[in-house]
Amino acid sequence: MTWSPLDVGDDSPLGFALPAPEDTPITLVDDEPSVLSALGRVLQREGYPVDTFESAEKALERIKRGGVALLISDLVMPEIGGMEAVRRALEEDPNLAVIILTGAADKKTAVESLRLGVDDYLEKPITADALIESVGRVLRRRAQDDYRRKLETWLRNEVSRRTEEVQRYSQQLESVSVATLSTLIRAMEGKDQYMKGHSERVSKLCERMGQVLGLEKGEVADLRTAGLLHDVGMIAVPESIMHKQGPLNDVEYSKVREHVAIAAQILEPLPHLARALGFVRSHHERLNGSGYPTGLRGSDFTIGGQVVAVAEVYASLTEERAHRPAHSPVEALETLQGSQDIWFEGRAVAALVMALKQDPQLKR
Ligand SMILES: [Fe+2]
Image (cartoon, rainbow, N blue to C red; front, top):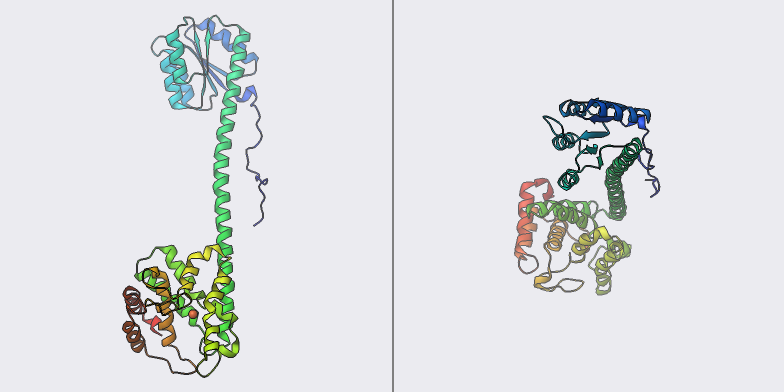
């Protein structure tokens, strides 16, 4: 992924430019024909395209067709008055700029104009200069508002696009780190005829057991990862111990026990694996405190850690080892059920039984 904070792309609306008068059509309404044509002429001389109307109804029809930048409306008119015309016009196009003209200025009208969102309020008789100045000011403000809205929309879209990009990128990084570690594990297990595919099996069992337990999606994914990486620390255990045919002596066994602490050292720098690491840390702990590395007891257990522990023991029992043949699934389950509430929580063992029922391929 290559981008920089300054790379705003070709579609960015950065850079404000005031539209030319010919790009800002004006609708002008006044029931006095002489005023209408005089004001219309002033605006046309300035280059504005102007549509003039003697009734608000006709002016509103024009606004409905769209593309109008500014409505200049007389206040007192027969049938539809100026205020009503402005209200309807703004309903039609909330971004329309509005100037009110009146011969009879009063406070109530001024307040009402403000409330409706009228941009300017001019008292008749109006000089050409005052009209041109007001139109210029109102259109400049409208253009700035348009620009701000466009910029806000663009920024909002840009932020969400970049956020998605960063999330995608960090997800890629996360999956790369898991993929790298699982390659390492495959390579390690590949050297041992008895261990081949062990971690992959534990991972599948953990995932299914997590689903059986109704854990949320993210936790199930962490269980799958923990199953895959539970023995990553074995990488530091000498091969002479790993592949020893007979029983291990105390020194050798203490070396094997170190694999949990080493797994923690490997996984700790990867923050997205924090919960999975918690499960890995406790996969050799037992309810009665006889496990390692900390001899955890009772309420300190997480269900995730128990799932990995049960899945790992079941997988190991049903696989052949150098010093013993593989146990059958029934024998392995009997062993686990026998150690229920002593080593393992009943619900973790029950989850295994259900997982194997749902997916018999996981039995062996
Ligand atoms: Fe282990």
